[in-house]
Length: 415
Image (cartoon, rainbow, N blue to C red; front, side):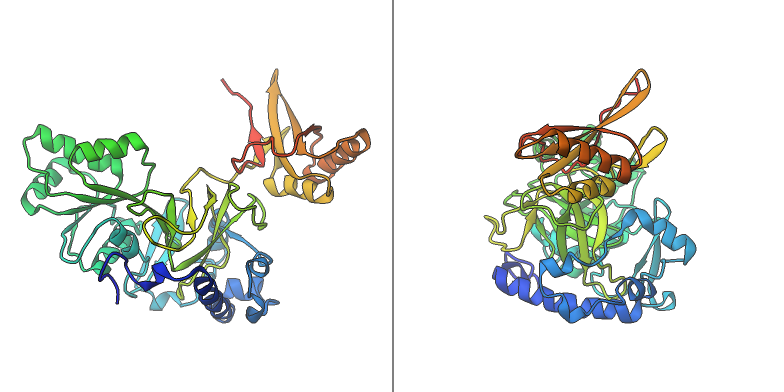
């Protein structure tokens, strides 16, 4: 039964081994579904036996589809690049995000699965939800509305803009719950106070779309909000992860399977290391398999003081696309990682790009136990061969490179 106590449903408190077993069973079914019904996944997974995907290592062998490539796929095969597993005539909505990138929406209850995040934010059946995300072209407003409805909440579709009218609406309707960016909530509350309007009904907020630094959270609490909870999702995938009242990172949604990989590759990083968020969705309409979001994060230990047992991530930690242009040539993270793979002595790499007198230079920092001149020369040859640009090599001690997920560090200044 959904939404009857502290937790949204019993999935949130499953034992880890049970969750892993059930999710891999669902993954096998999803991969088979995508192969059979999606032109794109039918092609890139044609040699994959879904029943063989029984572990994280097996999943990691499948190709990554990156969000950055969707524009090209959708341009050559409109409108959805062939990634959809249901024809356009059978979906309820088609949305447009910046790019432009198009995404489908379906009539399925809580299609974007935002209800779980709202329950964690303290939304309860009957609460009037004041939704300030946009309903125009993008799916944000619809994502949040469908989640609120799944919880059992009526929704006022405020959208963006018209601050004075929105203050009047809040004072009149007295909603208990807010959905939108944290900065707009602060604006509403402050301007409402200046206008002498009663904004005190809003007590809980599910926020997203931008960073929520501790200072802003504190400011919102000082303005009368009891609980401010962040959610992390995308238009393609819906909810990925969400905060709970424990404020210990973000718990991964039960409707997706998340990996953290080295940027530019499909290779999972070590536990706790920063990398790109790669998500496999159980959505039957848009069955994204190993979808590279371009966002950076890192796993935290499973389980939380709130009692939820699922895996957690630190939250959004920046963007993963570190492609740089050096001496007129693009250098990609995947090329740098290929250099590392060619030399087993290298534990970790970081390509640092600098410029002096408008002349670019790059140095590959390599964590090695014991460096020597022959190894240095061999790595320099690999850099030239794989990256197509000459670069130097610097040996550093194992564990000395920052744990920030960067494969390429563009340290050039253009001031």
